Picture 1: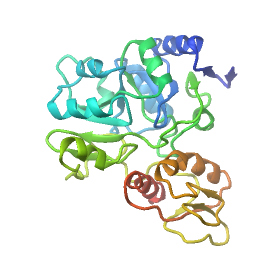
Picture 2: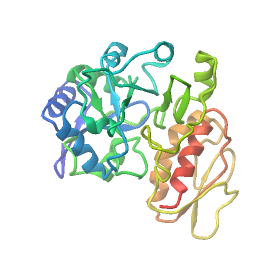
Picture 3: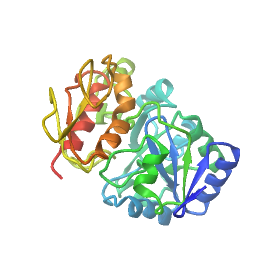
Length: 313
């Protein structure tokens, strides 16, 4: 079906063929991954990549993640190393992005990397994303499919709420299972945790034997590092124990609240619900009070998103 110029495609063979055709034409297609919906463009087409920045209102110094079908495809764009190989064997396909030096003759549009000598790259696990990458047959640059700085989309309707009429199509395959963007790691030298995400830092440590450290510089070297990001239109108040007049309350664990990330205190469930619940509460236009979430495991990424969402804009 068509909504104000943006097609909604089913995640079937016909939808995949149409989505791949649009990408080859240089058009923008939103598609589901296990983390969030991405706004895809041919990563080799400079005009298409520029259109991603324009549709989102994204600053051009903020690089994009390149999505590829498998590890062999990734190796054609980057200079591979042993740490990357270990992480890829354990976590690809999955919610892990690696930042690696660009290979000679990589062919990616300069704007994908924001002029940096490295590129963020991953192999998504979502069946629809993998099918689209195979049908397209090339690298797809895809940040989250939402206006820059706003709440990330975990459903097709979230995409349309922010970008309807500004992109060619959205491939609808229901809600995202992880619900948080990918963890971004620069594996060598390091490892350096550039963005907490759907893969906990402890999982990286178990593979490499070293816990990822925070970057030494505040310069933007990968996606997801802007101070104000993932933000609702309404203000947010963190670490709240109850709601005040004129607020809605996002809870965690057993408590009285408007919506609960996880009544049982399950961090995986909380991560999957985070952006969807933020979208729902933001529609009330009231201040969103948020209960404390433990800073462990996936809670590290959840708290990262909440702090950026509540940061001054």
